[in-house]
Amino acid sequence: MITNRHGGFSQPPFDSLNLGSHVGDDPVVVQKNRDALKALLPNEPVWLNQVHGTQVIDADLHHSGIPNADASVTTNPGRVLAIMTADCLPVLLTSRDGKVVGAAHAGWRGLAAGVIEQTVALMRAKQGDHTQTQTQNEILAYLGPAIGPHAFEVGSEVRDIFIAQNPASAACFEQLQEKGKYLADIYGLACLRLNALGIDFIEGGGECTVQNPDYFSYRRDQKTGRMGSFIWIDESQKT
Image (cartoon, rainbow, N blue to C red; front, side, top):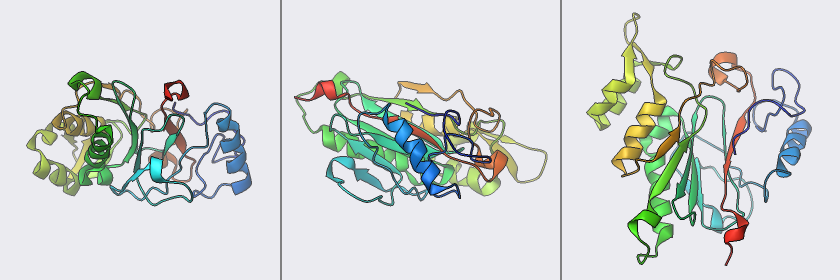
């Protein structure tokens, strides 16, 4: 499940379903927004203090507090994983058999540093049961709303980082007239990294938070709220 900016209680410029408690919004109102969201979720989400890194938590071992991390993984039905964004890319992952799910916050820094790879590694480690078929173990990905390829302007240093890791990344950058400036396709960059992990079933990737006013966008507005992307295993799968 992915929220947009509508249906909450926050006042401008956080209007209205802001889920971020770190952006300057009234904390009482943010909690009211989160409480309203709970009606649509099986449990309280595992919130993260996202730091644009690669730390992945095993949400099955997490019981209190808000950890500094940018991704989480669970095999526990009903445990809700949460990622907050306002231009960065939320990546939601699941095994085909629905026994393990993951969620990653992938800004360009985290993407380049390997947050997707670290998340998939923990998911595969938690699958563990080698009697399962390859098809059941296959991981599927969904790319949520993020800054689109016509809006994400970056410097040459960002392009250089990705191309040094994978020369095919060059196709995800379009040079602008201003020297050393490029438009980056964060969706394309994420797909390349997922493909390199053997993940070919990828959906989403068609939204732009900057160009669509229904979404929060830090690049567009600077002072703004945060949307949430959530994934969980249905509690009917409890054994």
